[in-house]
Length: 343
Image (cartoon, rainbow, N blue to C red; front, side, top):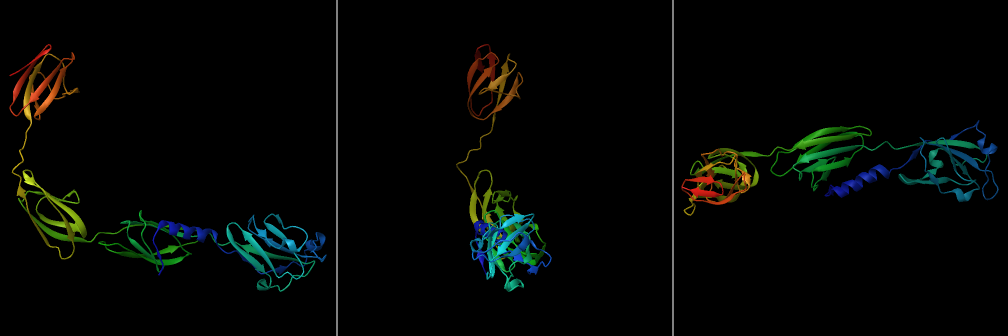
């Protein structure tokens, strides 16, 4: 089986499918009542009268024929029909077009061994059908797609555009630590069908016990609450157990069918000192009071405002500024004019 590992490979494959296709032609028919070959004659380099081959197309312009050096005159195009004069003895007519594979019109293979001079013939060009695609958008993005016997993987964004002939196909989507899924898809002519699939992770129930019991469990930074039974996706994870006044426990874990219990015991942090906000009662004649140039919205004259210990710059409506140092004991501040007193 062929493995395609990058979106670039898929893009190249799609382009080849769209533009590098063969043209096909119907059998050559003699137009017995058409006298164009003699009424508008063309002669080859030996002075012999040419046969005329009318090539009917569905208005496809840009076909170029390579045998013009064998006769006098040019290939003309009118209302979807090419007029190609065929010299005596010529058994095929080469052509090319920018959107299709170059090829040959071989008379013998289309029902005529030779074209008689002065006779008019016709064949009809049949364009290939417009290409069809199936577009897969899969989650997780590293999932592998098996489609029509081929494997597609390695696309960073999880999107694959796969050309497919009109038919019914079976596909399978697989990813590590996820439940695989499969299905059938029918592709019609000139259709671009989109399929979005999100694989379900394989889950395992794990009993996580912590000491102290009310510690908080974080797995991949998701809050799983406190001790107890948890549904955790299969695979590798980062776990963190956290509680105030204790040292966080962090570890890399692997969850699989054999993982049933996890036990953790936190160590008390003897160096931590829990700091609480200190209430400061402020009296002032100003309408507003500001802390570090920001209005203290909760302040009213004579009310307590909570400050974390530290140094701040207080100011009032008149632009008076005062340095305020806050410790752990509550105190009172009185602002009168350009002075500030603490009690």
